[in-house]
Length: 109
Length: 121
Image 1 (tube, helix red, strand yellow):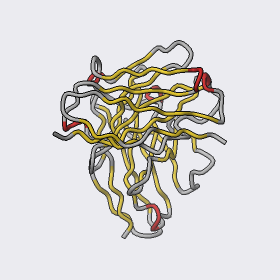
Image 2 (cartoon, helix red, strand yellow):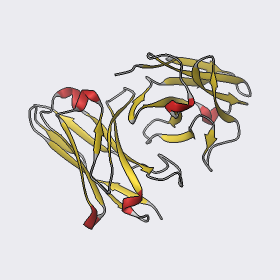
Image 3 (cartoon, chains in turn cyan, orange):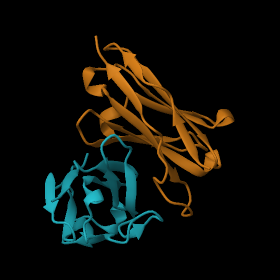
Image 4 (tube, helix red, strand yellow):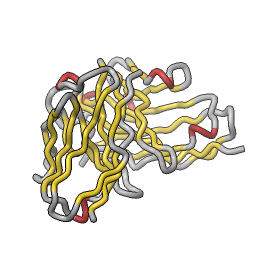
């Protein structure tokens, strides 16, 4: 089974910009992996932020955007807010078998 | 409105089995796959598998093949996920999450509230 890798932790200043990445042990991440990004705050269920690389949900703040960057999936947060401090997980599909990344703990400080 | 209500917390002994349910309402039951995801205490998310509500077809993570069984009862709009031969490593919150069969709809938009399964002797 593939291994999906994320930065364990990142820090961003309020109002700043940060990019979280999601790599695959099988090679470059492509749109065919249908990359997802989830946000999870303590004690809550995960909430999806983006799907199929770039698509947003109705509840996704405009400051979040998904993309492919240098062979990885990426989630960029532009204009970080204190409420964005959370764990972020990517999810990739491998022909119908899905694998989560290990998660990135994002600190807004 | 869409609701996905999971069964209550469970405490099981090592070697036992547990069956978690996810009762759905507010949308056509046969219109969405159901994925199951778990999260051990202080750990990340782990994908277990999915079930097609129409055919009952399933796909599991390799790690759980032979130990996890996903089923559904269309008459009561409820999905089930059973884990057998439990060990302490299976202690986790288990979530159900829906995923549309067609291109219409938002995938993983609704999740159950989670079911805590504790495995302890």
